[in-house]
Length: 128
Length: 128
Image (cartoon, rainbow over all chains, first blue to last red; front, side, top):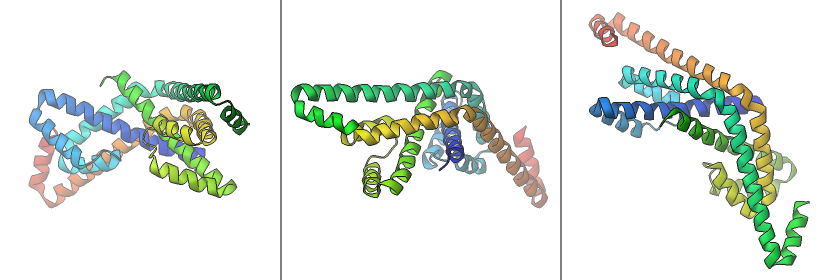
């Protein structure tokens, strides 16, 4: 998969995830304002897993246009609220996790080198 | 969940998805250069689903530090390559899909109005 395809596939994943988050937001609102409808939406969303946001919305549109339109509005608000900050957050997250993994691996290797000097030499040569 | 929490959770989802994509990239490279290792990584990745990228990498680090470091490097390249374009792509994707759903729903309602004039009136009033 080239970079363009990865970007497109990632876009779909984010869009579906924000649809899932929009469903959670509407569920929380309905639990306060209209518990029976919250119950209905929870049961519907349990049957239709929000794996593909568009498939979920198409199914919901056939049952309740009002709720589907509401979720569509909320996911649009969500994307407007959070997307600008995301590139930096994802850069930082991956850089941070990578450096944590490297650090822990080094610590593990240096502990091995104290207890088993030979295995340390093997591990070091593996890295070259 | 407030906006900050949604942004954090979305960051985790993107990070794990890019780890999955990095695994696919390394698998494709190894299939060309080292088929037995590709087979091993495919089997390992089948057993450890890349649902949480960090859990997957921790497990892989214990088995093959070299492959884990390689996947970490590739996911960092991926995030550098695609993240800047993503906000606009996700904005567009959600706006486009929302407008498609609304358009199709209108078309469905107007078809109903041709075949069943009464149900059209009911549908129209429901939307008010």
